[in-house]
Length: 349
Image (tube, rainbow, N blue to C red; front, side):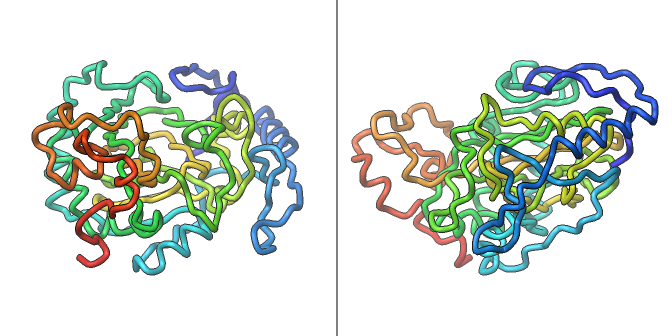
């Protein structure tokens, strides 16, 4: 990541952006010292005594590093290895998880839908900036979106991690234009109530997959950046899930120690849980387009408020309807937690 000479501003929250003034070099060095002081190590060990730094009150890493992350991602080569790597590292990088033909088809549909930058497509509850177009409920809006649900190399991984208890909680597409500041601040998804440490025995409640339609291998391509093993860190227990010190430093081009920048090709996918600390770096090259699928365990379905099949889009296949939670109203909700999510096993494809 290129060093960005900006003055640290107020705490970054969704829907809020601020222009930052140039910062002379001595102030940038002072910021790094302040960042280091505010992120002390607690010296606690992680699960099974593996020696992870475990902050006592939210994210507190012992050091910060200038510039681009030099760490290389671990590429997941087999679904059999996926659960172990996800448990240990908190993320998975799946190469060529989606065929080129599906990437091209869906990318074309996304551009056709969003070329006019309709403001109604961007949901205000997410962090927004002028260069972002964010479409929610994409599976119902974009017929081609459900092609992702047919990709065995993509779907088999969350299916295994969630022990077959799989439903789609959210479907989204993103267009990230040129933007000199970070597209997304350091955060955990879903707020403090789901910000619990990762439970190895029971697995995650939520996880998400991001599928890339454009090439993010060049530097400054709006790269996703995350901190492997940070899903083990204790909860922040504050009124939001943002990391103030790290976001002040991010404005100066400073990343926490251990941060990993993802440089993906079209068709690659990254899987990680809501407890993973992550951000999105500035984009100074070309527009970046991607899809997000938010997964959760099937037993998270409500008993009293099942999804009404009448509101499902006509283009959705039976399998897509099941994944998205659309079931006949006469079905006993308890039965939904007993049957497999799908009549087919993605792992067997």
